[in-house]
Length: 238
Image (tube, rainbow, N blue to C red):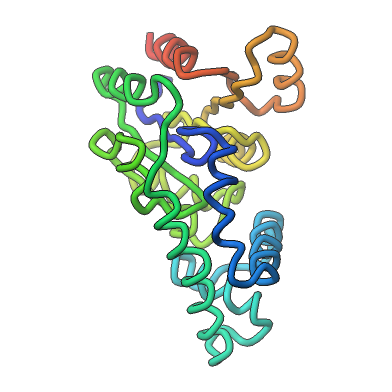
């Protein structure tokens, strides 16, 4: 069955991961302790499969996040204060930090080629998209973009991937998901039936590629750059 949609992760996939780490540094302040607890919550929600987000949308996610960090009931004053702290220290700071980005080579050319092939282009990221697509110079080429939080969960939970499929009215097996994290992107997308591409710049040798394939068997294929991604997707459409 031919692919109809190519969906990309953003951070570490459309531009280098080390840049992400640099851009996140300002959000450590003014409270490093809050930053540590915030990261702990994100690790927790990635592994928690039984607890539900209520409601299952961005509002519910932000509320669950604030309640977990404040250790208070969801609609308490303490939780509301925590929501405001999170907004100031993380989301508002990220919006400024990620205003400038330089994509991997051939990102725009690759997406333009996919568009000429009749493919729909989507973006799904765990972090807010905000102005990242503008900074990367591809906003005009993306048909649909969303943050995983809009589904109420983070990758690798199935909800974010199902959210994309439903929004685009496209069967899961007709979507190719491109990401740089096996645990979050590839495992999450493959478990719902999407085809997957692991972008790994280090996979330039046959030996390293073989090692990655063994460590990430869920990947439909592994590419070291966007030229390889173009080649694989072209073959998939033939």
